[in-house]
Image (cartoon, rainbow, N blue to C red; front, side):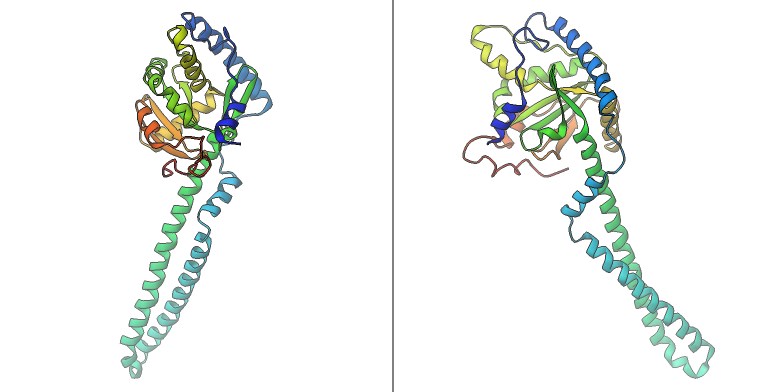
Length: 310
């Protein structure tokens, strides 16, 4: 089954007149949607509980899979540090004996040379171990943040709530966080690219940081009915657990040295890992130009061509 077909089984279009209908009464529907979202968040909180911010074992396992030889390198670094330190201690004891015995004064330069080599090697491998350990901790922290993101909840429709993890392999999520008016502008900018974005498995997750519900309005005409349905499907997802989403986004802003008030976007790869992020409007045209479609003869073969992981 192709990714597009699997995506179709996950997303269920709202019936006409439901809480996400595109009409001149969007504001009233948005208000009802916001109320239902808040009440559903309370229900989910009672049953599932918020995702943990601690480093999970799955993040450590993924780190081992991504860098399988790191543990081997670190083991040899420790062994070389121990060997160099032991050699240095032996050379130090010999140096003390040579300095105390004038008859062994000729051995001092040779001992000093060996001592310098031992401590130099120990220092070098200690530096390599320190760098490798920092890289390991940074990778685990990044994977842990991705795991925390994958545990956050999304509302597909009034009766269906899924975690971000459920969209791995079937959709490329684009998370937009900012004031409601900023999200409305992103919505307008995305309209010309809606069909191309859907063909590439892109789904938008709008998160209003000011607590307001953005108004998604489309012009109601018979010739635009099909396009409106595609736009509705593109913007169908809604975050649940507003507090947890806020916490996760604020952590990302802090790590990136971005102002807490700045609107940001975050794009995910098909495998759920972070592909790109930035301040301001998402580059919809770049997504269409760079991402491969999720249907056709290349389905599956190009799933990894989402760009490098940040």
